[in-house]
Amino acid sequence: MTWDEMAPLLWEATGQTAEMVAWSTLFTVLIGLPLGVALVVTDRGGLLPSTPLNRVLGLVVNIGRSLPFIILMIAVIPLTRMIVGTTIGTTASVVPLTLGAAPFFARLVETALREVGDDKVQAAQAMGASRTTIVGKVLLPEAMPGLVAGLTVTVVALISYSAMAGAIGGGGLGDLAIRYGYQRFETPLMIVTVVVLIVIVQLGQMLGDFVARRLARR
Amino acid sequence: MIDVSGLRKVYRDRGREVVAVDGVDLRVRDGEIFGVLGRSGAGKSTLLRCVNLLERPTEGTVTVAGRELTALGEGELRLARRGIGMVHQHFALMSSRTVAGNVAFPLEVMKVGRAERARRVAELLELVGLADKAKAHPGQLSGGQKQRVGIARALAGRPAVLLSDEATSALDPATTQSILALLKSLNRELGLTILLITHEMNVVKSICDSAAIMKDGRIQESGAIPDLLARPGSRLTEELFPLPPAEPGAVTITFAGQAGEPVISQVVRKFDVDVNILGGALEEVAGVAAGRLRVHLTGGGREAALAHLTERGLLVEEAR
Image (cartoon, chains in turn blue, purple):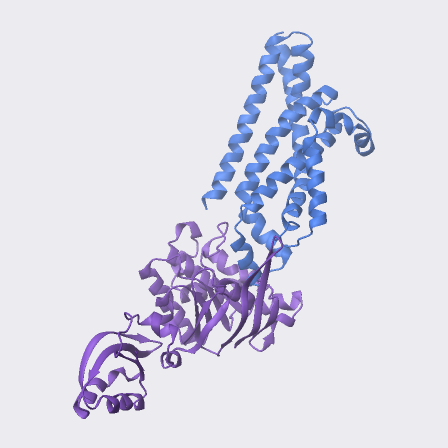
């Protein structure tokens, strides 16, 4: 396979991977962030302690995290069909990707929020701040470096998950590597795909680190 | 201004009950600086946090500026807290905000408009001497500067009461003095009532008008400092002016306010006694010169001399 033959394939696959990762990142944040906040505030000694709710949320998150992604992907096929209308293609893969990454991100959010000193929360309470103000104006801004670092780890995990999504017809770089590199023995393409993935992950990690460091330096 | 009555705080820790505050009554008068002195674990921090209900008391009532906080619902309590400033041992500043942003925070909570907020923040930073640090981040400040930001923030809502939770304990001695001087001047100029807790005698000595000594969750003694000094066997006096254990026959004279008068030489001249000074200390406390003197008094006029000293308002204690 010549470079000229590979280039359009790579270009298309990279675009699909980017699309999957971008959408699933968005939904992961939309689900995982509130979930992580809920895990912290409902905990004992939290802003709104509720042991039953905390237990249930913890269980949900743990179930989500204990399923290997490849199995989760297949297990949620009915749900995917319900939401997207189809179970193959880039759009369809966003559903399992989000379900796989959201609990993971929620735990990272939880850890980041716990890093915020109790004294800051109490200082805000002493000023008469409401719970929503404390979450929105104290916990989240103060945890921002940790949240960005957590998001970076999540995006990297999503890139790797998205390669697996290729296995069920999700397209993208993983799909390309399997179909051409593995099944057709196109070793050069396999190598180029791996290199592209490494570069994307590196760039993502560097960008995340840079932003986290900028935020933490203040 | 602050009235604490019958306050108890019991924690439950794995089925075991821990009594942190055990029946405390406390009265802080309008415009005074009241210091609660105690070692760590004495329950003073819990007591302070019960005053603005960061900890809800197990029993007892807390009244601040005429409002019984323990009777308020959550929403009302939030509003009432805005009239009570608090400064913290480790400053509790937000690292994601600038100095100005930190001071603006309580104003945002109070929904003060942007222009008014900016004006007030500038005013507060001026008040604590940090006008040039508005755009700095807390990480770039020294401990003393951080506490100044903490104080400015606590004053943002024009509180009548300031609670200070070991505000100087994380600071070096020189910085401690400058923060204490700031608190004293705020007390004088704004008429701010301050309730502080500390384990440093020096804090009580430097700025407090009244004090309480706390141990094992209870107040051991409490009152205006000159009154405490005049009280026989006062622990505060013992802490302020430590003397070696008295040998039999030694007389300990405690004075508060009369230190300017030459009482000892008057006694020697007026009565037929010899005075041998064994030890003593003299300092300005709560704005009055106070001290303790350990002496041996010998001679025919000894009893009369002691009676005279008592008559002059000095506290005379004889060791047996």
